[in-house]
Length: 107
Image (cartoon, rainbow, N blue to C red):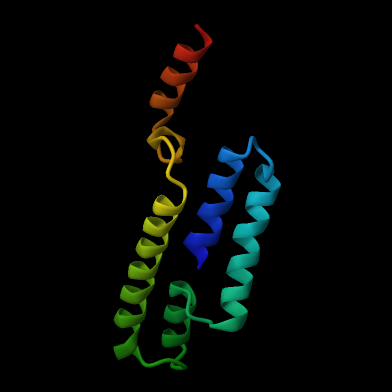
């Protein structure tokens, strides 16, 4: 849910000419984290904190973290399938690549 909603806000912002804006993207990430902590309490850091306070069994921590990683990977893959655009519109490029593209586009 975290990766799906947060990355969807970024992709929508890129696809729709900055309609979401940076504060909107930050708000989406923050609200999703808040909802997950309040509703589930299973965010990895919270799971580890609960286990260290002996409020959650340590033998279940690896399974929870594994499922969270699988879920976030599937969320990223679904976003890739939903928003099928150019590959360069997705965040994840190095600064050098971005600078080269800006230089190329400006010339």
